[in-house]
Image (tube, rainbow, N blue to C red; front, side, top):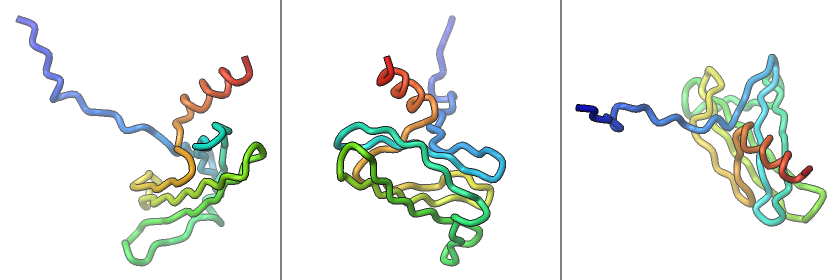
Length: 109
């Protein structure tokens, strides 16, 4: 009897932030024109410590593309280990690195 226990499988959260040495990188897409963004955050200068919640960091970014005047507001909350805890994005969406790469290749084809 082959019973699949779907409830035991751990659902993987999308990984919206990648870490490379002293940088954090996230990807976004404009909700109006579809323009893609690769955004770099410097760990040593662009993280703001959140004193309301112990050992967390915040990042605020405003992205403006070259195709339309839409602004994408990104607000990220990170743990002490720089893992994404929560995010709010207006004017666009966050993408995983895989989604960004796929969309970039589709646009270049």
